[in-house]
Structures are given as C-alpha cells and as structure tokens.
Length: 170
Image (cartoon, rainbow, N blue to C red; front, side, top):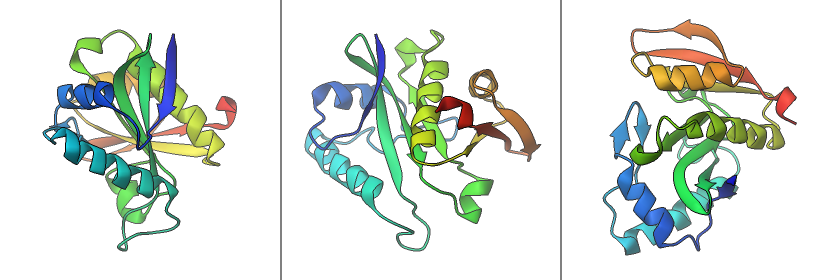
C-alpha cells in the first residue's frame, strides 16, 4: 500500500531514520533534517508545521510550504514539499514541488508515484499549474515529471522548467 501522509509534529523515529538516509543536498533538493539529533529533528518538525499554516510571505521571501511523507507498506520511503505559491525568485530556482526518495527505494517507481500524489495535494490547495524545476543532469526527475503530464517550457544553463496542470488530478 502506498500513501502520502502530511507532516505532523508527532512524527517519530521512522521518519527521522528515513531523513538521515536521504543526503543533505542532492540534485538541488535540500534535506535540512539530515544530520540533526533526534531532539533537533523534533524542533525542525515544529518549524516545518508552522511554515505550512503561515499566510503570505515570511521574512520577505519564505512562502507557506507543506511537507508530506511517502509511505509504502507502512514504512516511510521519501518526502516531498509543496509551496503554496511562488515568488519571482522561486519561479527561477525552486518551483512549487520538491521531493526525494531514500536511496534504497529508488528506481522502483516511488518518485513517479510521489509526484502524482503531491500533484493531487497541490490541486486540493487550489494550485492549478505546478512548476517543477529540475537540474539539467537529473534525468530521473525529468522522466518523473514528464510521466506525470509535465511539459518543458524553458531551460537555463542549470535547470529545466516543467509545468504540470493539476486540473486532471482533482
């Protein structure tokens, strides 16, 4: 069974262990929980939760963002986040959605499944079109985005820009 669960301040050791397995920075994804002690992780959960319920911009640049865990057969295998809206800077380097799968679970279709579920959540948040920015050398994420209905709309020296309509996900 595959399911997406929203971050909770009560998340425990299973999530903590999974987050330690996903590199701190890889392919443009930043995992700020990697390297934290368990106590620091519990405080990080509180900050992430607060960020999901904020309204508008914080500190002039941080937008509301909701984090989710991908569970397979009751075991967390990855995480993803949805930014509720974009600033000009996030349109250039960030996008709406970022996600990562723990190394031992890669190449099993979970990235594709996670992005599909995140697109459904984005639709529920009222986001009709989602931007995913992908580093040029990240062929796996490019394939995942295209398999979820993505259309490449631009490219820089560092990344490609993929837009995905969420209307069909409702």
